[in-house]
Length: 397
Ligand code: MG
View 1 (tube, rainbow, N blue to C red):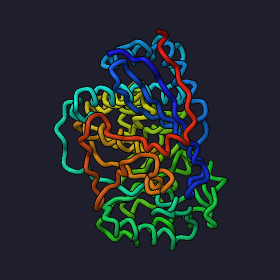
View 2: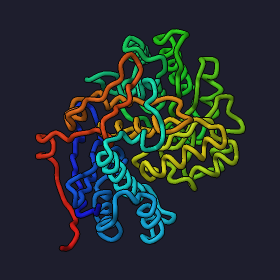
View 3: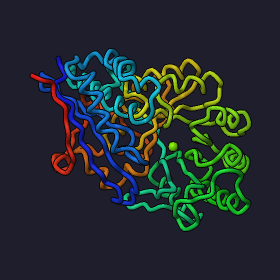
View 4: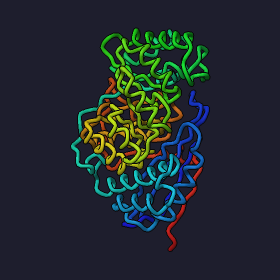
């Protein structure tokens, strides 16, 4: 089998259904046998998505066209070593590599009639435990960013009613009016700490005693502030603190890990096994959160998970993208031995995102059944595809 064309499909949904910045970038890889596969670049949110499509096409044209899609490891290593910039690169090059690699796994699954987790050697597991992620963005189809502590209680109650026994919330991202907060670097003031504590108490009140809370800090805090918050909320039963401090400084993270009374989780802004290794070696991370659409695709996510397995560290895929990103994460999580919990992001509930694919993947009672159709089993809706901006590179005849 030979790769003949690589397409990029983009949908800018920014501003729709409360999603401030939301630009989906997909790769679709075609073969000479009529089988095609889908992958996604994990830069849907934040700034940078417009750069991912051209990177997919540039890498694809130089190193992927003409290759056999079954040779995922050969293609991956070629992208890493021959592109110059992937060897030490950042989110755009790794997002592009991830999209290409995942699309190849989708092709392999479709060609063999197997879901990706079975290609990775794993039997289909029981439905995966799942948590309601990013409550502060508002939970539900019409969620809006939350300000007052009472709103955090309401969101927690809603998540509990939906069947979740774990949630993730960032108590510092929003100001009291529910707008993006500023002034979070350095030590935090008594007024800030009071508000953050009130919100975390509100979440615990809404959940009751028999549910877990992951405290998300999104690397908005400095080490000093993260440690202040850890001390402030440790009595509320916090499972992990996520991204307590700078991603550009493993020293800051190590310092936090040494002093924090709560275990730490990071990974959505780490790339490849070399990015995770220093944290694992130092014993400074208690759950890894690689994003399959950023870490290097299914191939590299699988390697990173096994690297963590050697350190007895569990895995939760970071997921914040289109329904395809959810499908990819589920196949990865079902395909590893050290899965802990699946992240169901608040934006997976928003209509504009759900309307991209024919399959509407949602958990039931806080548990996610792993799809067993070939590949990732996802079908882009034709009406959604018509609205997407497309570009492609093709193998010369
Ligand atoms: Mg996060």
